[in-house]
Length: 97
Image 1 (tube, helix red, strand yellow):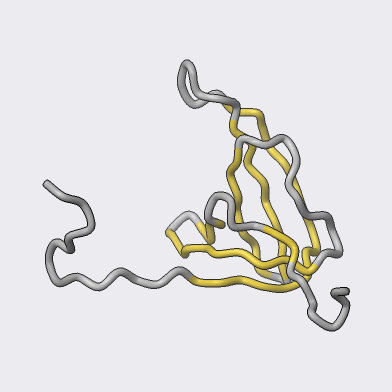
Image 2 (cartoon, rainbow, N blue to C red):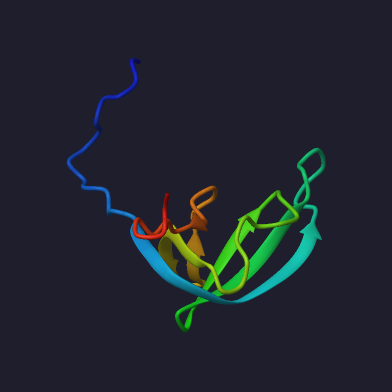
């Protein structure tokens, strides 16, 4: 069957977007989920007083405490989870040259 066809009439909930100053960053891991899978690291971020979780294969994240960050996330029963590869520094146009 060809891809791109919509099944059902269900609307997808849009991703939430977070933005703010990174206040705290903690790392757990590495974790081995199953054989052949690379190590996973779990990060706990505090952005403007809100707590988020981020899971990635990289031992370091591209942001540091004090940076203005932007990301997409979803709310779950276990908390707010940042989407993979969506975490980055926010660029302020007034400072960019």
